[in-house]
Length: 96
Image (cartoon, rainbow, N blue to C red; front, side, top):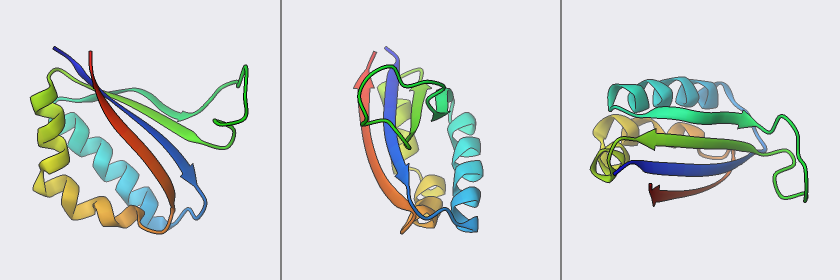
């Protein structure tokens, strides 16, 4: 069964390290069998203000085990610190 990660990110301090994090994490996602369904700000907000100024990522993995392997991987955990101090990140994973 597919697994999905939803991340709502409020970037308040973009840094060069953040750009490195974004590029490298995308490569790790792909290398581990995942893909992005959505990655960026809304094209248009229809209702509410919560998503205004936020970046949303919806990531898909074929299985929950692959999703959890991504989160536990040495590769991802070696770069995760690059986003420290750049904003707030709300992230959850869901079974499809």
